[in-house]
Length: 222
Image (cartoon, rainbow, N blue to C red; front, side):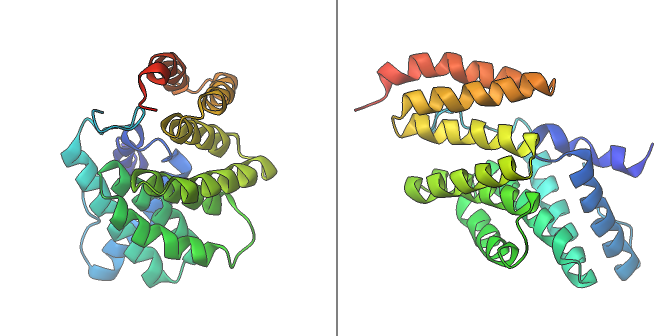
């Protein structure tokens, strides 16, 4: 089995981890092993928010977080800032999934500040998306909305259809929570259309969001 396939189980829990992004983690992890002389580490709702994702394997998530930490340290030690920023985006997303939003923000905000010194890129878009999500769950809705908007602008300018549909879906969740139901429906619908176009299995998530929105709207406290 190829080593990249050993990392692949991380992807279902962390949908932004494409095989290309997993490869960045792999290269950094191998650098850790080479530097230390040791093998690379093994990889193995009801909260008031609208359809917040809960990892079905919390222990696996914690392992993935530690794997990403090793990869980030390796990229920094190697002097590879672009890989480091990409891994920081992934790590921040995992920490938010683990309900550690404040810790995620501490990693994502300085990484975003660093990315702003470089030309606009997909990595900056992922940093914005994951920071916006962390801020959303820290009840910083206005800050999150600005960051979602910027992430979507970058995704459309590149263009990156993957970043677009993730940003639209996540922003739709925030809009539902802030009572902007028509805008939320528009975001989920556009995300669904892109996922259908890409034959992405996560189109089912967007369909569920649209169905849940109809029930969430009248039940949400005014």
